[in-house]
Length: 338
Ligand SMILES: C[S@@+](CC[C@H](N)C(=O)[O-])C[C@H]1O[C@@H](n2cnc3c(N)ncnc32)[C@H](O)[C@@H]1O
Image 1 (cartoon, rainbow, N blue to C red):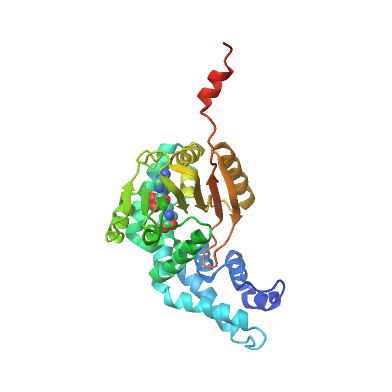
Image 2: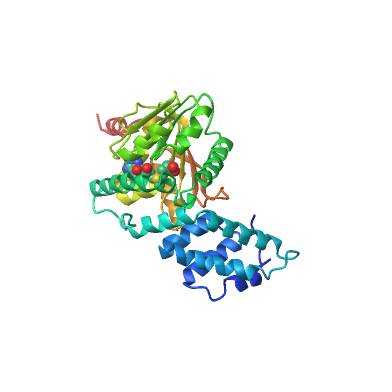
């Protein structure tokens, strides 16, 4: 629950005063004010420090100070501290593992020199990370905890249902499906679900997890396109935390994927992107998506919203226009003087 504006700032300030480093203090302030969930706050602190004992120490300090808060007047804040404390206590090994993964420097925010390099980097990164922790490899904020990941996945599924993306008649595509946590939940609710991913180890994991599901197809793709699929075969395509990596591989790959999604979707089909980049510039992302939507024949239904409570994913919901313009080549031929 989000605290009413200006309701508790002095109490929050007292809980975090003097904590170091300042980045951790800021994250805790946002968490205790209700802007980010405790799980996302923990993930952010681990990314910031790469030091799980330091994160635990900061949370312990807040827990100790919170004992002075009045249950009568500061109950929401007390509950939030309790939730954070419990998460830290219950997920200590997961936090240690994530800090270790971060310290390995396998991941990097740097833009790839070429699309080929970018794709090879993603393949390497995700082949490796799924072997460290299946849950953390697709969502660090799960802290490697299957129950936390299931709850976050449940929120995504509920939102997709509200947007009309999921239906028993629909054929769905999950781009960058990872371990198949969404495919698993979509399959019982859809006619068929296809998942594609550039990482062999991710697809192997997804194949194992989805083995009992008869209406699921999982493919290791090249990372360059969706050539495995025919034209206008899907009612919806989703990409959850995949575009930041496609984008990091190069602007040309983003264009290719948008063109490919236009091709494989039926007219009127849904295209949902949850997190387009990790740049932290919501307006910039919204502008880029608006331009891509114009160029690739989508209408933007939802732009840059954060509909989840457990996860801070930035959501875009597009629909493919019903009537595609005639191919540019035909238009060029028509305009040629006879
Ligand atoms: C953070 S994980 C998210 C996985 C999944 N969407 C989820 O939310 O559980 C990002 C996934 O995108 C995949 N990926 C990265 N670049 C890709 C590309 N060019 N084509 C297809 N998949 C890609 C990675 O291998 C990885 O499995």
